[in-house]
Image (tube, rainbow, N blue to C red; front, side):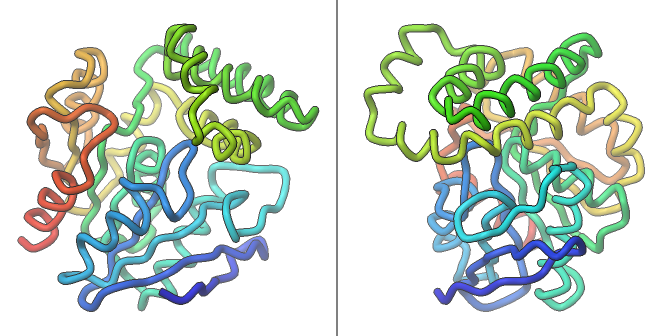
Length: 264
């Protein structure tokens, strides 16, 4: 794969790679993800390359992409639109976790996405929690700006992902921790996308793409309930549960589901 780039509406350079041959498919990652992430980057792209021309990209502020402060979720929708233009003017899109919310927002605004698949986008149905996420996004920005990157990662793990302290302590010892800190300044980006709250259910009623909304059978009940509520709010959506999967979905299970849906 060769590194390429597009220029978004605000002049930000967005880096991407392509692999495979066939109809275009763009992968959108969530928090802590760049274009190498297993469930939204090059590993998943390799599993789909025999059927699609797969675009793996670095969202703004990550990897080889640029950034133009201040961040706004709408700018990330423009980034995705720029990639779709580069793909020929229309493309299927898969979004994982908060990347799924980003893709849904873009589709609701009329970005040309004929088919859209999302896996466990973190829909917030509680308005109070959504407002709390907006406040937490400010704390994350302050920690990252003060070079307290470990603090920002810990905040995200404990307050957003609700990880217990022992699990966070174990994560700090893992080789991946350095990479997580490197992306700490983008955590508020995902939180602001997530913090749209219950109003998102009204917004997604404007999505016209054929949409697959997926969750894992081993994911928490509250998450599965929110995903099912989201699927009912999208006019042309179907819901599918991947058996035995959690939020950390197996790329092979994901690839099979995407092939079946996008190949219809």
